[in-house]
Image (cartoon, rainbow, N blue to C red; front, side, top):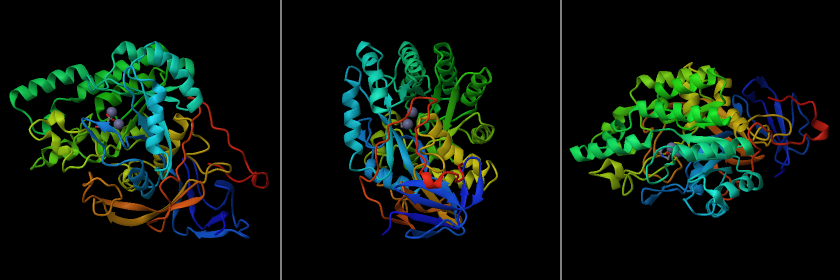
Length: 478
Ligand code: URP
Ligand code: ZN
Ligand code: ZN
């Protein structure tokens, strides 16, 4: 079969444009965009009635991640196959590190987890556990050599991942010097630890107490503190998994002061609420995330923040643990429930269905939130995150009229439940191309484990170079 393809009859949608045109793909990149393109010798793909979106970029995943004495149910193989079915062609996963362990060792470990397994392209963010001499020496080299241009600090998970404010500040300073973006899990871990201890001592051990011991005030406080320290360091900051009005307010205030503070929310916070943690028979454990699901009124605040631009991205925070045998580790003690859930596959469709279909965001905001903004923030644009001549042909052929019920019976993850079980969704990625090759075609997986490539990324604010094929200059960009 020819590796040159022409997609005909589809409606191209980017973060800024919507128009009908053909797309010619050569050598994995978009070679031309226009009407009635020459299709001689090419495979013709009919996209009539479909939107053609840039491939989704998921800026927040945890695949094959150890946590709470166990390891996520989904690894780079099952997780990225599910991502592909869901319209995501690039994932940015968190490379965890341990205090005292060389960072290069952790990066090697993460490469080994992904190589030969990933079915979509991937990059890494690097967790910073300490900002001692060794880490500060290694970081500039890893940022430059590996193209790992985003760092992660946790303000929660005391005695596991949490760092103190001094470490966070030093990381921010280094990020400013090296052109990296610091990502932060913003919750006040010290106070949470205290509240958890008190709850367990009272005998409050059910899953709902996970949420009650992590109130939104502690997310707001930590978000404000992180923004303030970023401002002082003169560094950009990206707040992951924002869940509540208190955090949105702090991000909005920082941005109004001109600080480079960005925020991400996740599909679970837009669609589920704290009542899920009260499901009987310990089922509430399926809905244990940190920060936790909130009271329903926070959802409107999050949608408004996506629509107004106070928040810039929607990441999945994919971090799945089986209900049987993994979430169950926390029976009788909610603090032992592994945190996280399965979201990588439904992120794209849920944002379309709950966002565009319900009139909460425009279709261009949708593209920006699931793809373009992450490409820009994380040094992938314009190679990825848009449909333009010279960009990677990472494309989603999306049927906006398909209706389906989300369920563990039909998802492609290994994990034994769906966080969105029974939810009706409008829209479906029908076919997905990664660098011009189908990974999903008419609802079937046709890619292979290992077809995903590692993508080194440009420094914060810089663009990835692309080259435009000569004969095609003049095609429309997005
Ligand atoms: O509950 C969550 N979010 N689990 C994944 C780890 C993290 O904090 O992002
Ligand atoms: Zn987190
Ligand atoms: Zn996470």
